[in-house]
Image 1 (cartoon, rainbow, N blue to C red):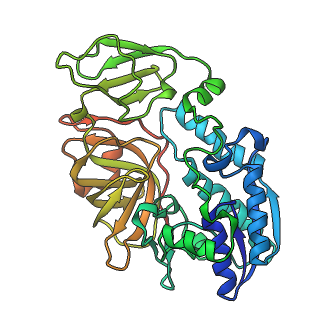
Image 2 (cartoon, rainbow, N blue to C red):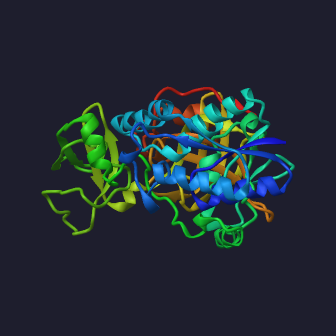
Image 3 (cartoon, helix red, strand yellow):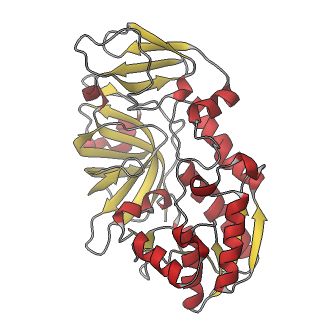
Length: 393
């Protein structure tokens, strides 16, 4: 195949490109220039879009012996990822920019351009498996598994994706890079959010959204416990940095339970009030497994899996958790997996709209849960906009 290898400048994408060449593919490397001003993005171990990374990618391509180009995608990245990140926080949701980058940039804009130029597929250094059966599975290195942020991909996108690293641990990838003479063999992994140079998410959002003071209230009594400078600075499950004026009577910490942009209110309460046993999600991408289905769900990147019964219908996805989960945030992805000894299989994903605790009739499916919370339940996450139709692949 004629393939385009997306090379970030890190060790994973370099080894992925090298393995693709060894597999007999006609490989061309490309680095995505995503920053309007690369000097404002993180450098060294904490970046993935800097001038340093571009140079590292070029040197790796030279060692591998493949052609190399740089594609300027800064404007699209800003529109589809950075602006989306800010808008989601402003709406009281907690976005995942890495997932959005995969969805909108690497496997949409880049893939579309690659196909237009005659390439058959895009190769990336993601730690996930995609075998001849076309099923997306977790990596053998569970600690580095990235299937969660790839679960947003459609069948058509997966059909043109190649993930050469899924059967290797990160330790083995680094050792192979050293054996190949790649200078990035010991380069530290990138962390956090590449477009926030100093790591200060709250400050980044404040610059773009301005200060918007409001109340922090007790979820049980409604009493005002403190003030905030912007509800966008908080996320569901947050405990630190609340700066409450009134201590809890029992001395226990409080956690963010919900964020309500309409009233600019942050609601807090004890940890047990974070519990949800039903998760409603929108814009599902589902890969053909009939529902309802018993499976496992992951509710945030690097989060624990929870057994659940998942139903996908015209109004979205509903997961009835077999045990309560905490810290479920609107805007994050819910990813369903079918356990498998050869690697857990991704069944589909959706964007979390809300989490509830209380009786919900599983037979009524997504529509019943998306309409509100039963009288015995409580809502702990904000809504995520209009429900969209299911995308089946």
